[in-house]
Length: 340
Image (cartoon, rainbow, N blue to C red):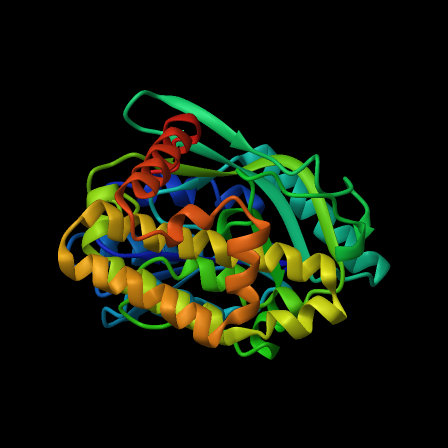
């Protein structure tokens, strides 16, 4: 059995795929690279097959009809035979020395028979427009290089939350929790991180800048103008997350985890609200109003946490001045952290 499966969703990725895959191969034969060709129309299928032919002990290829990023992740998870599972988008890459250190640690887990549920590392925003890098780390939150639980975690800053880029889940945990991402929907990385969290009992954090997130291209799904056009897909993601867990009950069973998950969900609510603000038409204003009516009626615990215990309450306002303040804060954060 392989130690780590890495799924690489690929859609018309010919321009970037080689850079990505070449940083995964140094993981050696103990790694499984699953290239999921999601109905590409460029040279991506040919490149995928070439890698599989050249590295048959490491690379496998899945060719499928286009189903979107989440469906490609689902396909990769179904094929995964490694003890751990990670997703690397085809336009991103990994830091090779960091990957090799992580592989050493996973092998040590295997030797000791101590398989943690979740491994967390740092990620780096690699911004294409101004050639800058911003490291997002968790040294203030997680104990380093020791097995711990949610009760051992510190407090997240406003700028910090767990992304798909920073997680390596135990493969069987993902399968046992029934993770299935929706088809033809962007922004499902939020679901990928969020849904499995209550199943995680043991965690291990390494202060390594592993994942390199190539950000800032005009055609990316996180480009602001594209996000505004696709706000309905963000709402779909939010709906799945809202239904995934009872946060009020979780706050009794595991208050530390519930606090984090409530905050993560609050951030998604705020993003959706700001996208409605940016759109600025009457239809978006009505959808924004209805979002908050639904939250108040059906998700009282989350609604109260946002309104009375977080700095995100401005996102609920139907008035222009608070909306402008919310947009200004969002754009300031974007300028600092270069997240889109």
